[in-house]
Amino acid sequence: MEGKNRGDYMISFDFDYYKPNTIDEAIEIYKYLSLEGKTAIYYSGGTEIISQARIDKIRFDAAIDIKHIPECNIHGFQDDKLFIGSAVTLTKISDYYLFPLLSEICKKTADHTARNKITIGGNICGKVPYKEAILPFLLSDSYVVIAGVGGKKAVPIAQIFGEEPQLRSKPRLNAGEFIIQIITERDYTMLPYINIKKAKQGKVDYPLVTIASIEKDKQIRIAFSGICPFPFRSAEIEKDLNNDSVAPNERINAIISHLTAPIINDILGSSKYREFVLRNALGEVLFKFRGENNA
Amino acid sequence: MLEIKGKNIIDINVNGTIKSVVVRPADTLLYVLREQLGLTGAKNSCENGDCGGCTVLVDDMPIKSCHMLAVEAIGHNITTIEGLKNEPIQNAFVEKFAIQCGFCTPGMIMNCYALTKKYPHATDEIIEEWMESNICRCTGYQEILEAIKSVSS
Image (cartoon, one colour):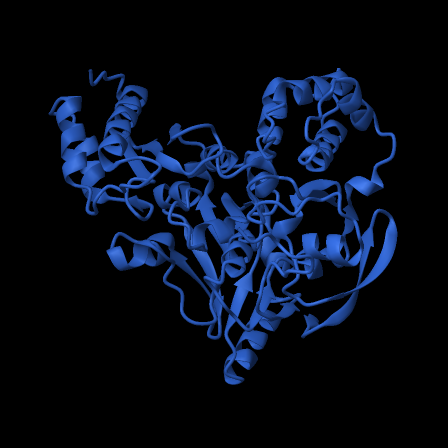
């Protein structure tokens, strides 16, 4: 096996680097590069981009680093809304605990040192299918603020990460658009919740099953990662889960039958094993919110 | 707006000294530290952010230098293992025999150093959370844990 040679580059292709200080600068440089026929990407934590570039899975002509744009670094409450900038790191979100469910999920994503670099925007927009940090936002009907050539707009998160299969694996953003912030009503951040992450081994691993669940107005909301090749929340599944007229086991059977994509079957876990883990996790959710035992 | 096109000379602050280096924007901080500055303490191992062997401090925060572009380091203070001298955590690694082959040791020490600075009395939970970022192929974790605790207590 050939070893690495002194001087080998990690990333074999060249690109230009831009660090705008404002949203307008970011958009303008994107427009300029597009007119020049160049492929530009928005860059935040960059961990996934560097990994993918290293193995030549992505190529681009320019990286536009949005970490220094003030709006992308906001992290706090304003007028009963929680604003989280897309360049805020997972470490900061887990340390500050402004949205406990989100903080706990961030704390279980990757490892501590990696979380010092991974940003919330990168986690939810990346190519890795798990995107666990998106689950609390799906449950909370959060809004995503997007900047683009046409200006800024706030859209419900379900519009860009919705139930339709084509929206699930990657955010529906137009060319040149990037996420600035995610906005969540304060009330949602204080609701009772449960977060379950089951991995094959250890704590630092991709999930076999991750579940985030809250209870609002006596109705359980639930979102999943690790089951199907995308994170999702499903109205049909929530209807099954809240159908108190049938026994817990039947509810869980209904949920399994309503998964709209096949359960992942890979080296981390067979689909049968993931289903087994999912069933137990759903039992934990029902026990937490309803005190029901599915045994 | 900062623009860096093609190979350029940039200044980065490494171990308290401003260093001028010639970089491509695609060069990782790990590559520049090792190949341009000769600071080989940060190890080139998985190159994928998994092992922690390349851990350095960026403004006192542990970061995997394989997952950071050198151009991102502009304006930040980088500390490598070569920048630590006679720190209690280094001595603790010696005293507790927290070294076997030694390959992971620089990355381990950088993470432990940041941990003990931020949390002088770290709980087991915090130690475990932080140290999950570094892998020791020799599996000498118990001695590493003892080294951290000897500094923390």
